[in-house]
Picture 1 (cartoon, helix red, strand yellow):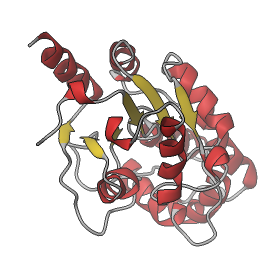
Picture 2 (cartoon, rainbow, N blue to C red):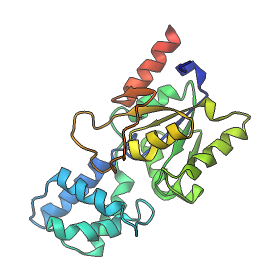
Picture 3 (tube, rainbow, N blue to C red):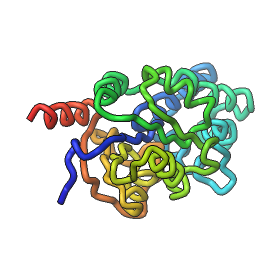
Length: 238
């Protein structure tokens, strides 16, 4: 039998891309560098280059890896290939904004569930993201905490162990994310109920996120966090 919103105690969240607009942050920073260099760049084209560079074999943890990524893509964009600009791109993560509906929706959901962040970002960056979102999380797991990145099942196992220590299980979790590759596919394989937030529903392609080998149909599907929060409140009132 399909689960309802009343069946969950925890909502686990991908952060970068689901709650924080990292694509906008990267494009804005690159656009500023391009303006200073008197160069015109295409934002979506830059994201495609970013995606290829980000998921190379020698990738470092995010967003520290943005220094290396910048140096890899700068020549193709006609931008100055200097480390100081890569460091600027990395440090821009401190000011990345949440999607317009993220903080408000999280505040509403926190009234009903324990919210857990699951991010491939390092802890230093997550602290900035959490403040931007209003510090709504009951617990948080970063790449520094898990020693790995999603879609590695080991990342999820760390969260399962945390929930088990509270005498609960993965059956009590609804995993919420925008990335088919990092979250939706693997969460299905691990037996989690999932919710796809399709942030790029009005845009073509996968932007800065790697394309999955196959599409996974989610248990719940919304195009915004507000849509999820609305659905939860509607179900509660019914």
